[in-house]
Length: 419
Ligand code: HAM
Image (cartoon, rainbow, N blue to C red; front, side, top):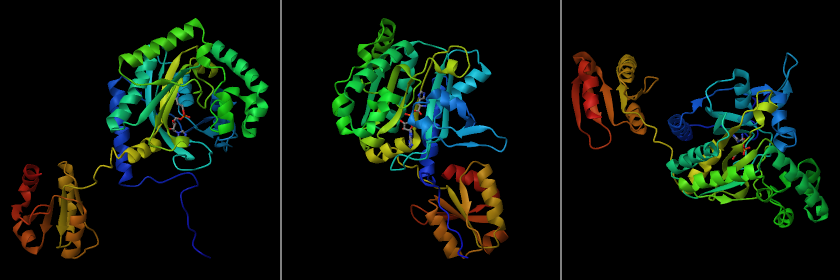
């Protein structure tokens, strides 16, 4: 029988060094920014009761068509998380934290059974925040500013921020009805592939990328024209806040986003360096009814999610935030029996230095080659002579060939001074 050959499942990918160094650096950067703004890390399960996600959008593709759901061995119908907000809000409702707003950040995988393509995966990862317990429009501004600062700090410059308002839940419902009627009157003019959506979720039609449909919806009624006074005041305060902080933005009345829970502010950041189908590097908005829909007390909330893969694609396209160089400080070359390399690497690492070595009893020449490849600044060499004298030879690897003998007991101090 031929031996099996496996690869990562369709639509998923392995993140290997050196890309993973950049991945980790991105999460660390985000953790710092979130921490500075008072957000604490929340780690929630990767799967939930299917109904948790049904509540966030049973008329959306994400929930009806793209869910990885299954019945577990105990007969529970569960689903892998397709997005982060529902899990965090479920956790909020379950634990009822009393500090308001309760501010959470996360970096976690999500699963959507989508048609894979560049920048669109079946497992993708999001950095995000959720803030619950305040309806203050300044909190919307804070959340948007945090996201804008993340992109700015990475060096991204070609990023557009689009904002819109869905209004109060009542505004949103009235708008959906009015839009549904307007689209029904023009149903034959829409691209045939979008016609069925008018019935199920008319707002999603605004999001269509199909030319024929876009030509029709260009003249569609706009959410921002039918906002209640309360919603208009909220949206104006958000825009004023963005202007005040110098965050460029543009109102996009057709921005409806792919989830049903949004009220008031919605927003999306688009990377202009990416193909338009996958250029949303992050988005979010308010979801003032979600905690209640998940069985909790009425609690306003706002947040965003930003795709790690897409952020990194945008960085590649703009040539910024390169992978950090992966290298060690010291490479230990042991041509005696490997025992010295075993002890010295351990000692150097405990002293906080990055140290590596070769294995398998290789020749001096072969170990020196590995030392060069490792990017180390110096090689610490132990041969029979050095071992007998209780010393090592420290050889410069990068600039010149300078080398000197150092007693083993003084090696750490010597290297600390030198590196
Ligand atoms: P979303 O717009 O569905 O919103 O996803 C957020 C971001 O995740 C997108 O802008 C994109 O960067 C990335 N993303 C989504 N799907 C994929 C995919 N298949 N492959 C690669 N990247 C992807 C949400 O998920 C909301 N939970 C955001 C939010 C948080 N709203 C309020 N709080």
